[in-house]
Length: 110
Length: 117
Image 1 (cartoon, one colour):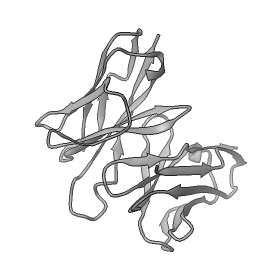
Image 2 (cartoon, each protein chain N blue to C red; image 1 turned 180 degrees about the horizontal axis):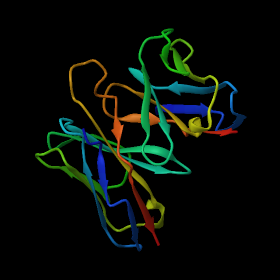
Image 3 (cartoon, rainbow over the protein chains, first blue to last red; image 1 turned 30 degrees about the vertical axis):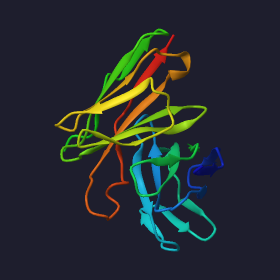
């Protein structure tokens, strides 16, 4: 059975700190790993990673995939209160069916 | 371009009733999928529709069903509601384009929060 495990489940930091969120997975015929940010209801797309070792960046956010060790990390530097959200990791075999982890609830205190 | 629209936003039902949720995908998106989100189980895949056909299905009982119309709009139905069906139901759409990852990049709606009493 496909499985995605995120850690930590919850994280509280101060504004300006750097955080690293982890996602490990077990999936047959892996195709891609995706990161989403869920602030209120609708998860919004952050990154899709398919190749190992290639960092994706968007502003203060970056992510990398290690297909050999079956994990990905999401880094957020110089955190702001607006980064407070649940961060979701999901994997797919290529079909529409995404398998999600439990999510990491990130709280940024001013 | 309008995003994924789900209606209603909130719904309160009692056990044994049935419910229908609606989803309008982003214009041009032909694939629509449904997910259930609960605090205990996280986001779980229900099913996916493309061109009015169910293409993928998750591990939910037959009480959960769906359909897609010719304009790509989709509905999800839950019959004989149980307390455990209380959840946020999220709809997502994506392009079913060439093999470049567009299929997996889902755009989510704001969901329907269903409470079963």
